[in-house]
Length: 355
Image (cartoon, rainbow, N blue to C red; front, top):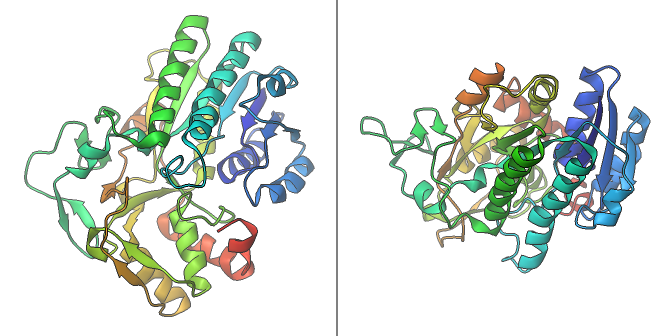
């Protein structure tokens, strides 16, 4: 099996690449990376030692893809992953669309030309912001939780947001480019006869994740707390009760292998893949965990709302469990402990990775 991973030197791409090499004897891995993110150069030195062939290129440039070898599968892990992309002043709206959507179009054309199949690592951010903001919630143990007793909105189970939840705009520029990429991938697959899988991931986290709040809040918070950097609970009365689930990307590897090995007949192409309710926590709970690990650290409260922020996003991965017998195996505690150990071993990680 020959596999191309885009964004291979990012956190998700490099973790998946290492997992595939360890779990799939004989697999041939290729990767393309534009090295635009701080920290990606570290993986550039390590991955070739595993037998992975790296190409320096940009998926937004068709001629860069033309230099790549023929493969059986493409795993698209390349994206500008920030929900604030295009509106935060650090990147333009055109850059977000070109990278997250037009790059996907180029990859789909690559698949069409070479007869390859396609897996997109998508996001929980495809779900409607107004609908998520309107969920019935209560406060318990310093965290927002679904309010018990009453009927749940369409697309919501006791375990979280399901694949049938609304994707009506607004979902942010980032979310809309990923949602459009999903639709185009499914259309290309149907039109040109290749397999397509869409994996909507919750928040990815683990040791070695680049230290930016908009790209990995668990890693950023732990590293910042360890360094006693200023920390702030933003929005929602400044209490830090907003909740996210957490998934280590190495837990994606068994699912990806099954998706590439088995025929798609009878399976839904779009599934949530997340840590779920058991692997979720609030920012206040994360801060308390850090206090216990590193010692108390002050945190400021800023009740002013922040654009696109949401009180509670936890994905229900029941469909992935039913279709693929998949569920995450790395506990939330294990993820946090791994990040903390990395923070202690690499005290300058925020500077290295652009935090």
